[in-house]
Every structure is written in structure tokens, then in C-alpha cells.
Image (cartoon, rainbow, N blue to C red):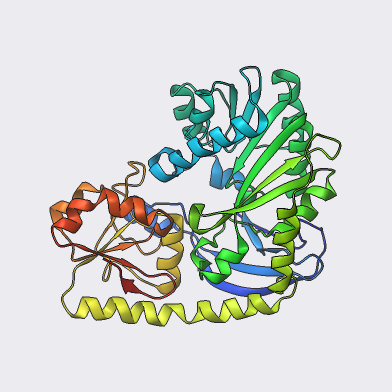
Length: 412
């Protein structure tokens, strides 16, 4: 079921101007199992709009979160890069917040515990909040206490009563998925200790525009954030954004630190510097977004020309990473199994299935060496270094890698 979004979820204004449409898309993390599922596939409009009141970029329609996230196929532990990021974050916050064994570290959208495992070993008390029951079951089996609910203000209050205030609240790549942003932020305010910090990571709008990362636009990502908008959002619900930095994760992300205004945290100069940078880019006006949309419109033709050229020359092409971003790219560019023979992915939850709409078979990585395609297109480009390292034998045997984002090209 689709939910029309007629008002801005940051400022609640109603002046939303669409600037980019990617057409009709299937739920991008749905992987049909065969013909019966193919027939039952549904498609929903995927359009991004600009708020004329607060300049927030957001979708004009959402899918029902309960339908999307109650049973999910993305497991964080499948990514070595993300697991390593968790270790670095844990050590950073241990020093920065002087964490002790009695402190509670809670993670919203904790998935299978890939991030919490690094905090568990500090040690601190840990708690996961994860709405996907299938993933939460895995997390619990791995020893991570997990509450199976969507995070809301009401839940934040209940968690504080049951577990005490959280010294650290982690929200890595969850805020963009949230339908009711103001309620979510109130939940953080209710659960966060007076001297605590919420650490929120989101894909950065600047990287999306500069890197032509339109494939990160899909129904699960309702919002596309920058620092000034995040500052306005948290301030509107009585919280302080006291620090911000750019990090390389997922093709370029923001990490922001949130606390209570009367807490011990002083606002750093980096917040103002990033806001000034965004204003220099005119991101408070619609012009850069319209220019971005024009660049996206040119992608399909050059992608098809590149892939068809290889195919017509007898080149066997496969892909790596049945990621949501890859599914967006394939759908928008109308690429199917006639050009991409199969896509390998480490997740057993995707193997033996097909990509949505295009119906490219998803296989285990072992199939790469067995079938030895000439070119392996990296669709999970945010983990390109990790994938190339894992597939070193494929490369040694003469296999080559390609990327399609920005400019289609063979890279190795």
C-alpha cells in the first residue's frame, strides 16, 4: 500500500515541488521466487520533491513501513566494511563519552547486531530495537537483547522506564527510512540520558548530487538529508545537534551528534562550517536539484549503449551485489537478463531468487568462478573495495570489474 506524503516531514509545510521522477518501481528489496511472484509484482511511483519552506528533499509517496520492514532481507553482518565501521565507532565513542560497564548503548534499527557486537565487547550494556522479526530472531540467537518494535516516542518512554536512560543511542542508516520524523526525534529525546548522545548516520545529500547517486533513491529512503535540515529537525523537538562530520561510508554520509540543550555538550565549529558549505552550494534553492534531475535523465542511454556494446562483442556480463541501489539502477535503465546474466550476492536470503521486475537470477558468489563471466559489474558500489578483494581469484583468472554510476567503465 502506498501512502501519499502531502506535507514536509521536517517543517510540516505543504509546498512540495517535485523535481525528479524515476517512474514506477517495485518494492526494491523484494526478491520474487518465480513465475507466480512475477505475476503478483506491484509497482509504485518514485518521485522526489523539494520543500519550498525548509528545503528538505523527500519522496512524495511512501510504502507502508509495516509491509516493508516487518520481514526484511538486508543483514548488516554480510558487509565486512560495515562491521569494521562498527569497531571504529565503538572505540571512538568509548573515548569520547568515557563509557563504562553500567552505561546503556541502544541501537535503533539494530538489524542482526553487526554494530552492537563491537559495543558488547567494550563492555557496556547493550539493547537493540529492530522491527523486522526475522532479523531480530537472528540477533537474539547471536546474544543481542532486541526489542521487536518500530521506534516511536511512546516506545522511547517505555524503554527508559524498563532499562533506564540510554547514554548512547545509535541510529545508523535509519533516519532516512522514518515516516514520522518528529515522533522519532521525540522518542530519542525521551530515551536519551541527560549527559548522553545520539549518534545518527545518514547518506549525505551533497554526495548524492555530486556522485549522481540516484540509485540510493528508493521507497525505503523517504528523506535525503543535509546538516541544516537535520539541525532544524532536532531543534524543533528540543534537542541540540552539537557536532557533525562527513564520513566515507555508503558513498558519502553524515555523522551527527545529538544531545540535550542543557547537557554537557558544546556545539562545535564543524556544524556551522558544514551549514555554510551547503548554503554556498545553494542547496536551500531548487536549482541544484533540477540540475541533478537533468543529469539523471542522461544515464539510461549511455548505460544501455555501454552494456549493449559489450554484449554485441560477445562479452559475458554478470553483476555483484543484489543491493537495493542496484535494483533501482537496473529498473531505471531497463536492464534485464539479456544483458546481465546473473548477479552474485553473499546473502543466502537472496540467492535462488530474482531481482524485482527485471528478473535477473541471484546466485551465490561461488558461481562467479564456476561460470567465469568476462565482466563483473559492481552494483553494490559502496562496497567496491571489499568486493574486489573478496574476488581476487576471479581477477587473477582474467576477470574484469566494471562500474556504471557516473560514467560506465571497466575499472580493473
